[in-house]
Length: 117
Length: 218
Image (cartoon, rainbow over all chains, first blue to last red; front, side, top):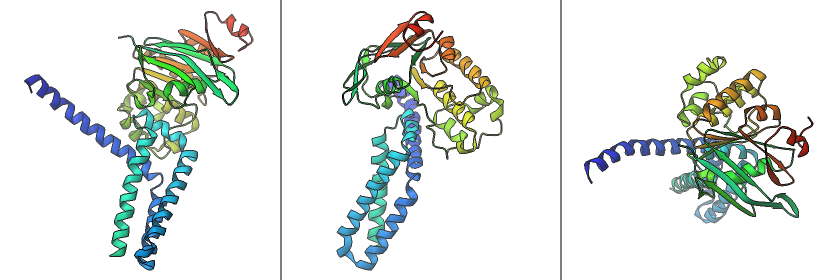
């Protein structure tokens, strides 16, 4: 890497970092639009698992998946205008859903493991 | 540097109903391109096709002669103001301006009514003020082109005047494509004007043509 390339890398890096922080902040904002519902459903799932035992895992898993379907349907129909905000900032609809639902599912799994223990 | 946005070969049908069939539209840096058309003639559909949000049967959208299928993934190329409020109402002006890397104080100097609103959420603003913020954001944010669907809706005459002044300033930096039912404002501000009728765009050279194309009475 020559000196010019090094200078370039130094100037680009903070910009990239800022962009990543901004993207995460925007995804967090989007996540907040359905967080309460999703978290309550996760807590209900964890409670059900702790009461019914690990045999109920399949039932609880599909319960969560179906509620995801309802959440996606609701947001896509009633809050669809807000997607233009994220698109104007370079974040497509699919990226928003994949990012936030992945995080929420990991949270769901973590709380289920905690409930079983 | 002058950039060019071109849209053509657009064909759109909903079932057996043909919406768009013979489109050519060009937008350039330094120019405001107006698009007029009666309700239901497909202006918003055309904008959504250009933005990539609506799938057409066929289309060709080019930025500086390069085809871009999904312009919504490229805010550096194109920003879009839809005809409805699109900024989440819970966000504050401070947050919105930070997201788009814009200086709130420049906005405040131009529109002093917003002086005490820096930390206000959009839901606490009036409909007109909310729209003004959205139009300002799309006009000022860094991009080569901006498409504005009904930018004058809900705005008072003073606000419209201020926005038209801002458009004339911003056209030096980006190409603007605008449509609105307040056609006198569109005619006044446009450097080139298209009328969408019968699924086709017509580049008009004289205001009298609007009557001929069935858009307005003289």
